[in-house]
Structures are given as C-alpha cells and as structure tokens.
Length: 132
Image 1: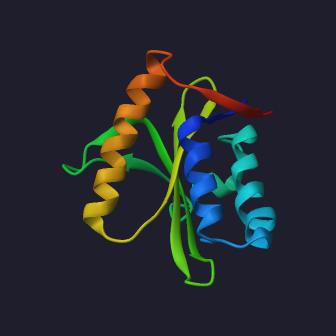
Image 2: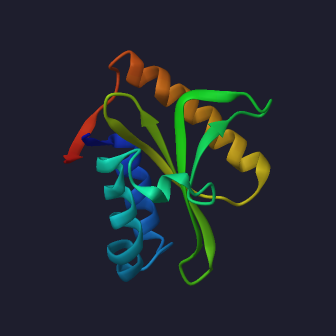
C-alpha cells in the first residue's frame, strides 16, 4: 500500500515543525516510523492498539467511512497529544496532523477531515509525495 502525502498533511506538518510541536528526534524515531507502518496495514500489530489507531467518529458518534486517526501521547516538550487523520482507500492518504487541545477543537478538525475524505473520493486533492 502506498502512503500518499496530501497538501493538507504537508501544510500541517510544516506548521507543526515551524512551531516546534515535536522535536526532530521524535519525528525520526517515533512519528515517521509509525506512519511508515501504514505500508503493512492492517497486518502490523500496532494497528490493534486503540490508543494508537482508531476509526474516526463525528460529533454524533457516527463512524466516518474510510476515516482513521493515528494518535501519539506525550509528544514534544509540552507533552501534547498529536493526531494524524488518515483516509484509507486502496492507498493511505495522510490528511491533517493536529494537536488535540479540547473536544470542540477536535470536532472542528474531524469536520474538516470529512470534507477532505469527500475531496479524495472525487480526486480533488493535491499529492505532494508518496511513501512506498
């Protein structure tokens, strides 16, 4: 399975890097290796851990078709919770990374994610690279 880096994912990564949300070492040793696990989805056992990988649900607790998120806890010097939304189709589409701050802010990110998934279904996204 290819991992497609969308413009939304790249933009959010660059913003987080600029704001020093996570260290270079955390990115190289934790975040990137975990993202590369998507190549072996669903066979990698880490995808069975709900604290790392889960289906995204909207505000009404309805599961979003093809919508998942990767989760990291205690990342960065501020010990934040980092999320990365992923659209799972025939390939994995990295959509947007964000810091989980509060439930309302997360619901806004999930609403955006639903739009991103619809745009991917319509092939209305910009691919900025692939991890294969």
